[in-house]
Length: 504
Image (cartoon, rainbow, N blue to C red; front, side):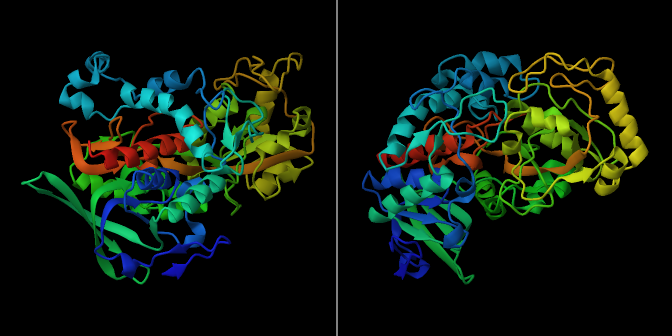
């Protein structure tokens, strides 16, 4: 037994002590999805092992590094637009036959509909219904929730969050899991899985090949497995395979993303799982490329303009509240030359109350007393930037009606690329700018599951013994529905652990 380095001095087992022990549940990943599954199963009396590729100091996946917002208007209710937004982001040009079939009871869905990669209503309704009970369950471990300030100056949805962020949740869950006898193996990577069924009793077993912290290959045996190992944002090969050229311009927004290399998804697909979600896209955030800080965000672009490396605007910076639009705007930045842009703003930004909370980078803004000086500081063509700003300024209405904390309809007039809100001339120096690239929070493509968190095959049938939860499962298309990912991990992680132990 090795001793954990945290202050609670809770002991964890080394890989060698766990080798070939038949577990009731093997969990890959120690983020909110994996730990929720482990705790839920342990409370059912299961023997559980959690595998984590990172060192112990970095355990917790993406959850460790995030505020972990829940899209909820109270501790018992999701936001009013919750299901509508998730279902409306179901992909482009969805076949009407799919929509019609999905409106029937799930048992009557044709196999191709059960295996379809859309965010089906069964998953969405299960998430909505499970959010409140899951929050109550998390609170039983000492986790507190509150409506705390966010980094959004304007927001369209309420956000409940755990006090202390994701780190508070994973620390509480892990502490409880270890007390319940859950084994945690760090610097341990799952490589491949095999399933077998004993015909006499129809008992399914899972054999998982792993490598331990010194690179030795070992085998774990279990009755069930939960894949909760996140997406593939830490794997350049998979990013290039699915995102194409955009992959070379992006990077994870936090350290935890580098540990997410996609093996869990690949193992499930190789085992016959149906894919789900949009493999060609990802949840993006506007990131300052100069900074190594966690989520070094630059969210004030709605009050300025965005220009590419040629000093040209390329999109509507303010189609609505920033929390609704930063995702697709960030991805659009990645489609610009060299995958970078700059937000340009002036001293009018100080009319926006508490605007600096939208800046999470630890790097200073570029500054210039004139636009020419600013362009030189940013490495932009000065004349082109001046021409862009002049055209924008001439299109702005009078400043009357500016409402920084709500959508104000203060739109440009006559520009080929409009700006819908908060449009005011940029003419009060000194001028400022931040560089922005798209950072990946997580990838959208993953494993198809049903409402019991069972992995389903290409014919929509549950694969015995195989479960998945969190960012390893596919759900999102087009635009991320904000403040739902960590919630999804908790809800379906809990479901996976409980369902696996019921043996249904």
